[in-house]
Image 1 (spheres, rainbow, N blue to C red):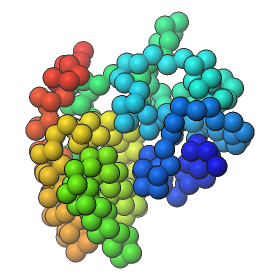
Image 2 (cartoon, rainbow, N blue to C red):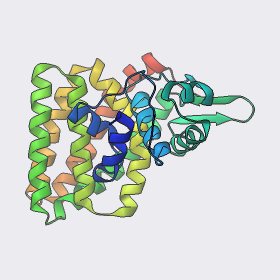
Image 3 (cartoon, rainbow, N blue to C red):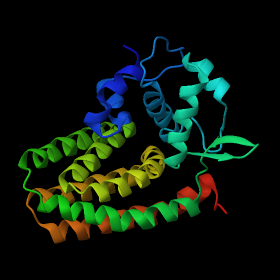
Length: 255
């Protein structure tokens, strides 16, 4: 089974976070052509391209063409077109009439906009998660935290990122608010690129995230809703402020 087909098979169970599934279970994309793909290939292809964009395998502002993507993955242009539309809706690619399609740029301005919104939305999700009575999902937060701990200790930023995103997904599941989830997932796709990059280049942010995420998970597990809300807001604020100079230096101020 190809990476694209495997991702599609598991897509619903991980709420579109195929990057988490591939990283956790060792299913990685490569540059070979992919043949005999399923009827749902456009969604699966969108997930594979999403991983490349999030992990910066496709750099910000890289030019994308239907022809090159179709050739690389051995598919027709129709599913490629559909996949690119999906990524455009999610803010990961941009399109200009008669000029083409590019990976969405990254910049300090974009980072500020994304994280300003994340502060409020993630805080609401943590508060709602703490009020949940789903003890099984709350136990899984401990597993995610242990994976974060292990990745932090061995200096594996990619695995830390994967476990951290898994923790976020558990919080969204616990919150059980479909409107909030839609808002967060639309925003999260853009935020993931910054999270991945910062964990790769700033070990201090990995330590900060691990320490305070553990406190947030504990508050959620113990149903301390107000504490979970306040700590989640504070953590994202700290990461935002600590990372602004790094983002500006690497990606520029933006327009």
